Image (cartoon, rainbow, N blue to C red; front, side, top):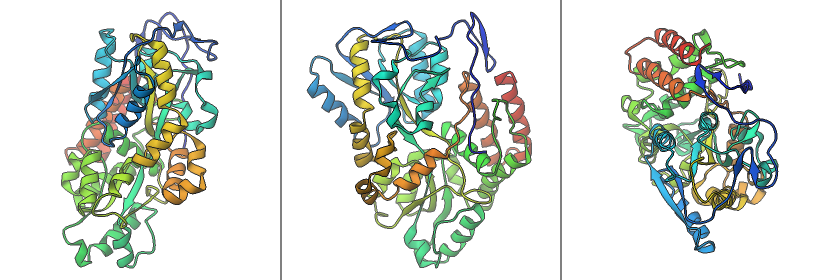
Length: 432
């Protein structure tokens, strides 16, 4: 299954959304007019904060400095949270629950938009202030909740298969693998090379955190299964889903995935690949620029993620800019969001940090494709990516996925038992 639809949630004084009782909901429909969206008035100018995970690219401060030089009376302070997504989400929620104005503009994982909007932790935005028509449609959809805009797409993300093109060529492999079995066969050939002594085959993000939810969902989707069906109901206890989880668990057991990879987040895998420990690695496009400055520069390439019977599906990633409902100086914040999410800024992040832009033109510009040959692969990854469940109580859903997937990867449970337990947990957390 390549796409999922999210059912519109009914507005009422009290509603049940994915098993969570809410006492209020935002207004639905269009974008509003003027400088108001819904009941929000974007007033006040002065200093604000931009809150995001730890910057591993070095580019974010440059873009913020550019704003600060142009707006000396409305300076932005960059508040860096931990690297892992779960900790970022938790700190943002804690700030919202205390109604603190310490956080102004939030960099949200695309899958958090619905949760933050439903709880009224972020403001509905005026659509006319952002060039949504120039962006990839799947990216724009991640910024909406119940048909209204609650965030500005700043970057997208699609999973890519990084591989050692030099070693595959020397081993007589003509191109990157399209299936998991082909990847294993390619590794067997590469590992016979003297240069590959001590290398492992494949890794992704398998520590018990949001990255594991992403990798698990990709494995399930790439085997023809789903985590939730088209109506948002959990449907993970299936033969297809088992094939996906069996691939991951079996690969850890037989050494295709090194045992230490169950501790890997994005940066751990990147460092392992760049130091010559891996033939293949699943990671995001941000890594391309960094690997291009490492010891494997000129010796790697990227391809679509492999799957069971052909190319697989990525989970849709990326970050959206949202405005805290409790922030001050919202007029400044709205202008900064437009600046930070502009096509010009997206081009800077692409050129200096290989981040996936939300703008269609940047994928199709011939000069950029020549300079960044991974762009066509990345565009297809984003366009065919499968969203993670966009539910109000996403924290409960991802926690259950991480718990059961990790149990299967570490051998604490069989894939069959893990999926059976996961189905039960998801039904409980979503109320379906």
